[in-house]
Length: 92
Picture 1: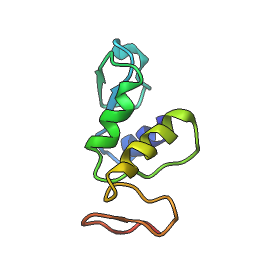
Picture 2: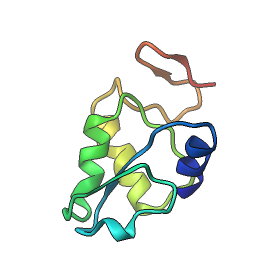
Picture 3: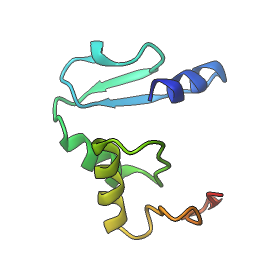
Picture 4: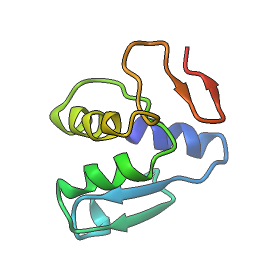
């Protein structure tokens, strides 16, 4: 996620980091606002529930957990490369 936050910062954008840890010191140096939730892996469910859509790179267990939770809400995740985000058009 550091690369995403760095790109956002370089373009003058604003990023919010929802951290699983209870201390904001764990945020990467490019996060604009760090929210130290202290909820550990439960953060994955929060992200999957709150996201307009998920675009993932990689397949760590945390990423896969977020995709699985979002896929339960069928309008939130597509993994076949032809997905759509509500109101955003094709993800291709």
